[in-house]
Length: 81
Image (cartoon, rainbow, N blue to C red; front, side, top):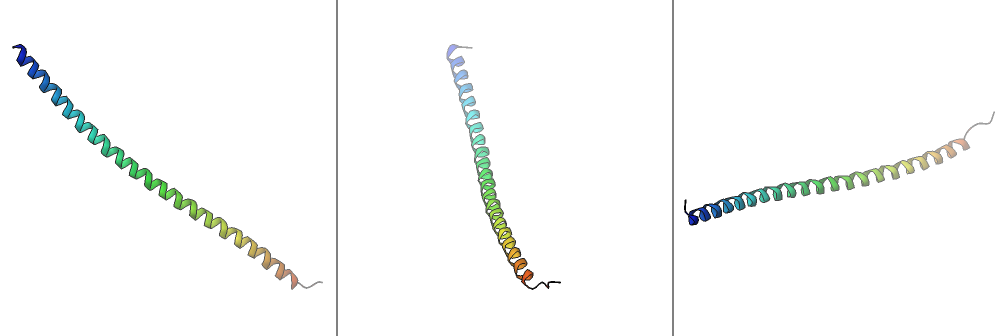
């Protein structure tokens, strides 16, 4: 094999390797985008859960205050023996 043929074969191998690398990078980019989208969904879900938890806590506090007030009102009507 002549020197120019060897150089041409080497260049062809390099070009093929570069194309494979480009394809691999495209696949990695797609996976990264999917991961990013998944992380955003998890973040949104976490924020939603946090907001719901805060609402439940506020409702529980309000219910507790209402129960205490109801107990005071009921105690006013208790008969003394």
